[in-house]
Structures are given as structure tokens and as C-alpha cells.
Amino acid sequence: MKFTPILSLLLLACATIASAADRPNVLWITSEDNSPYLGCYGDKLASTPNLDELAKEGVRYRNAFATSPVCSATRTTLISGMYASTLGCHNHRSSNPAPTFVKAYSRYLRDAGYYCTNHTKTDYNIAGIGNGAWDGKDGNFKKHLQKQPFFAIFNLTQSHEGQFSSNNKETRLDPKVMELPPFHPDTPAMRKSWAIYYDRMSVMDAAAGKILTMLEEAGLAENTIVFYYSDHGGAMPRGKRNIHDSGTRVPMIIRFPKKWSKYAPAAPGAWVDTPVAFVDLPPTLLSLAGVPIPKHFQGKPFLGPEAKKAEREDFVYLVRDRMDARYDCVRAIRTKDYLYVRNFAPHRSWGQFYTYPMQVQPSMREWYAQYKAGNCNAAQSRYWQEKPGEELYKIADDPFQMNNLADDSEYAAKLVEMRKKLNGKLLATRDAGLIPEALYGAMRGEKTLYDYAQSEKYPLEKILQLACRASDRDVKNLPEFQKALTDANPVVRYWGAVGCVILKKEAAPAKEALLKLLNDKYLAVQVTAAEALTYLGEKKLALEALGRGLQGGEYDQMTAVNNLDFAYEAGNLTLAEVKGLLQGKKIGKTPSRISRYLLGLQEKK
Image (cartoon, rainbow, N blue to C red; front, side, top):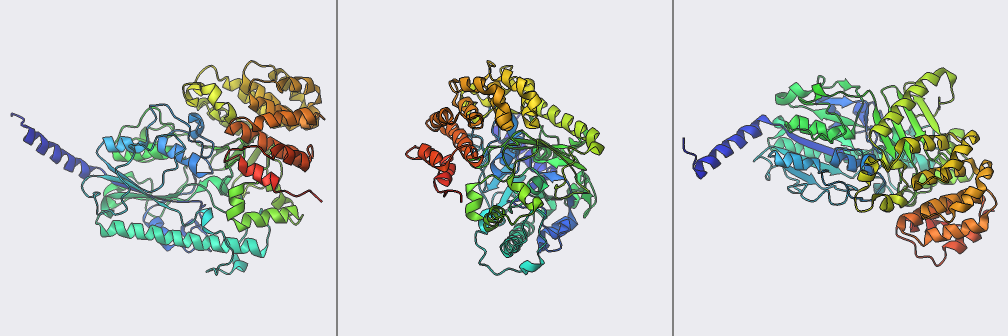
């Protein structure tokens, strides 16, 4: 047979039609800032009929987790199929470059003939990855989407923390019936905030219902696999931005039409207990669409033909880093039964003073005010205090993760097991989170931070051991910190200084070495040594170094202004000294959130 151009086009069209019929459409409905506060997840106060109905028709994942408890870092993982911490894009709203091989998962779908639409959230935290990622922002299934198999995202913002900034609202539920978690103070203002949040969840549910109705009316439901999940944990304080279940565990419901029921892991209405995380979603999506999974994807498919071949771990890996202008570094392992947490900055509290939630959340302001007034019990005060180096929780006995078992001899073997899992995963993924953000530019040079973190120039095993020693708060480790202070690698020197900050006055034998670091080539190392020296009576030299940090780049400034704040909170600096250093300084947009906070403080009574 002779192939003419017209015949070739006809054959291609027929192949496309057959291919479209043989491949499912996929719809993702995502919501923002909500834990599983849904009726179908057993919440008796929830009014979420649309998602409850979806759960009856689909399966519910009991152990689904966002890889990070904040939106931008979460979407880094979702769009790339890789851990944000591997790419060096784990800090909130940092927009660092990624290697050229990293592409949006939608690009693989588009290359395979899918029409891909995003209505309308991006916020990827990776510079340029959204370029060419989407065919459009269509919010109407009848437009384009019937011509070829489609993948569509609808992002719902109704439950976002910015949506309930006032407590002057009538609510469906009487605030008196709210069931507060044990870490929240029981006050009328806190109860009212929770009641408003449940109302916003109902509004979000109605929006999800409209999308599902639109799919039905377009006649596409019978060929569309529907996912619903939230982008991370709840908007209420100790939810979003927190590594515990309240910040990372999400609702996930997946409905399979009869045509594609062969891919369903259980019968309609059933639960799935297997732990899954967002890093698993891109390979799962490609598996369902029959698209080859790129080798650099770090998650494992849990649905579709490739799922049977996947060697899945029995845990998920969770990361928490800079949020807003506040630094922290936390890594966690969550199995079905346990949560293990390593706090690499135990000298910082869980609830640092974040500008944005303090502005938009009455509940955050209420909790902080109650704590400052001395009205919180031990469980409620814990959030605002320094963290332990390690945390271990048994989920069945402690769903709110309040009873830390890390020092309980009965769970010593479990602690060692979970610690080994976490350290192994951190090393295997070449986690870049132990590199201070202010050193990124110097370390990556003309390449990306990923390239540096993959290289021998990043002695990760050595740094991890040092960071764990620092986290342990044990003065016996001081000789190791002293040795690190003279290391050729600035990341090692930084962690040596962090170890001294955590030991506070017990780091006195390292004083001379710390003083030498005030002349370090890198401001990040200087200002960290300066914070340690505020505990050792070297206020004048420490202030000079912190002042130099305030004159550096944005991330040098961020490090300096954070360290300045905590040195003041520790009583090592006076408010007058802090304000004197900040006044007249030109501070970048994000670090200025802390400087404005400090400049607005009044003298302690």
C-alpha cells in the first residue's frame, strides 16, 4: 500500500481515537489547607455531602501524606516527581533552578497525546518549570476535553487559611460544640475560629460537588478516574507548617468508573491503609495513563499497571524547612503505626512567630496571646517552646502526637529502627536541606544546588552525623563541634556553630574558635557563630557580625535577623541593642517581616 500524506493523517487520526478510548481521563480536585475534616473520614461535625458521596463510590486512603506541610514545597514535589529536598527547592517560595532533565509531569502526558489543563494553581517553587507545562486553564469539560484523553486539575481555595480572617461571622455550628485538639487553649475565640473553619470546609465541598456535576453533565464521568486530596494539613494552628499528622496527613479519595475498575485497589467505599505520599502521585498518574515513568522520579506508583512492579517502602518521608521568613529543618518518617521526627533545629520552637498566619488567623493570635499571658497548660504551651531533638509517637495511642516516646526504654528498639530508616532515606535522596540557604549561591556556582548535592563536594554523611550530634544537645559532642569549626567545608563549619548555639553556655570551651569564625569567608557562618557568642559574653563582637549579616544578600539577612531575634528572646541582647542594629538598614522583602516585628516590640515589663 502506498502511504499518501492524506492517508497517513487518517490513520494517525484513527489511532488517536482508538488510543483515547483505551486510556482514562484523569481529574484531580485539590483543596488547600485541610486535614481529613470530612464526614467520610469519621468527622461528626463535618458537613461535606459531595465528598462523602465520592468516598462511597471510590476508595479512601487512611495514610496519605503531603511530603511537606506547606504549599510551595509540596507542589515542587508534585510537579517534578522528586523530593523538593533533593532538588534544593524545599524552602517556601524560593524558586531555585532545577536541572534541565526535570520537567513537569504534564509534559510527559502531553507528549503522549493527553490534553492537560490546570485551573489554575501553579506555585511550583522551581524556576521556569511551568513553562510549556499546560495546554490551557480550561474550567469547562465541554471545551477541548472530549477530543482526546485529558488530565485536568481544579484547585479549590475556599479552605485556605486566608479565607477566615475574621471571627465576626455567624456559623452553622454552635462554637460550644466544637471538639478542640488538646494543644489548643479552650477559649471562645478559639472555638469560634474552629466553627468558621468547618463552614469553609462545607463551602469547599460544595465547590467540589459543582466540578463533579460538570463532569457528569459533559458525559465524561464514565471514562474519568477522579482524585480528590488536599495540598497539606489543616489551616488551624499546628496544622499547616507542622510536620506532625495535623500538618501533613491529608484526605485522599479516588473514584474509578466501571470501565477502569480493574485499577481500583479495593471495592467502592473501602479504606486503603498503605502509606502514600505526594512524591508517589506523578508516577501513579503516568502509570494509569500508560505513559513510561521517568527513571529520575523518586516516588513509586500505587495504581495502574506499573504498581505491581513497584517495590514500595513501608513508610513515607516528610520534610519541613523555611516557612515564610523563619528557618527550621525537620525530617520525619511516618509508617502506618508510628511517626518519627528528627528536629535539626531543636533550639527553635515549633511555633515561631510567623507574620502571615498572625495577620490572617484570629486563632493563631489568640493562642499566642494566651501563651504569653501564662494561661496555657503544659500541652498547650509546648508548641511555643524549644523542641526535643527526636520525637517518636505511636499513632493508635496518641493521634495528636502529644506523648513523645523517644526517651521511653520500652520503645528504644523502635526508635533505633525509625532513626535508621530516616537517615537512610536522607542519604539516599541526597537531601540538600542540611545546606544553609545563604550558602546556596556559593555552593552551586554556575550549576544547580541539585548538582552540588549530588557531588562529592557535599560530604553528606559527615554533615548528617554532625547535625544529629547537634540535635542531641549533649555537651559530650562539643569536641566534635570544635573540630568542625575549623573544617575546610563551610557547611561543616556552619553545623559546628549550630551545635554550639544549641549548647548555649555549655559551649564555652569553643569560644576562641567561634571568635575566629567572625572573620569567616561566609556571612552565614559568621552570624551563626555570633549567635553562639551571645551566650558566652561576647555581645559587642557578636552584634558587629550580625550587622554585617544585615548588609549581605537576602538569605544572609534572613539568617542574621532570625539569629538576632532569638538572641534577644534568650535575654542575651536588649531590645534597644536589637533596634539600634536594625534601624536604618535596607532589609529585603521577606527578612523585613522579622525586622518589622522586632522594631514594633515594646520593652518587656
